Image (cartoon, rainbow, N blue to C red; front, top):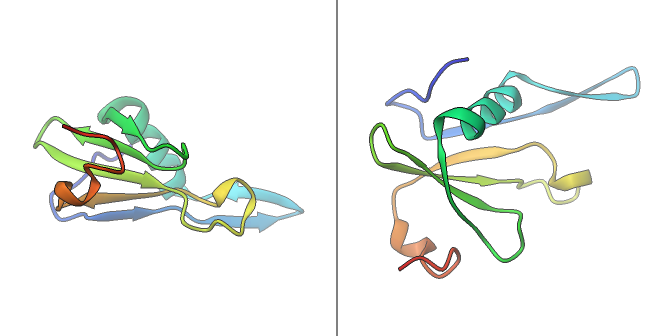
Length: 95
């Protein structure tokens, strides 16, 4: 799987429906790979639906969310680079 590239700021997954089944696209699979082996979990918010990660290769922070709340399980994942960590300090109870 492809690591995060320097020019990337958002990786958004999509679900496709085929034969009454939900199929995760390549971005969903890539996000799972990234949070499982490339990024370090820092904290989850109180709801458990948002998680902050650190890419230790370049000290970039990434937030994992499920923005399509009308869908089962919050829908497909979205991984977005955080440029203003101060705005997330309270949400993630950071020092």
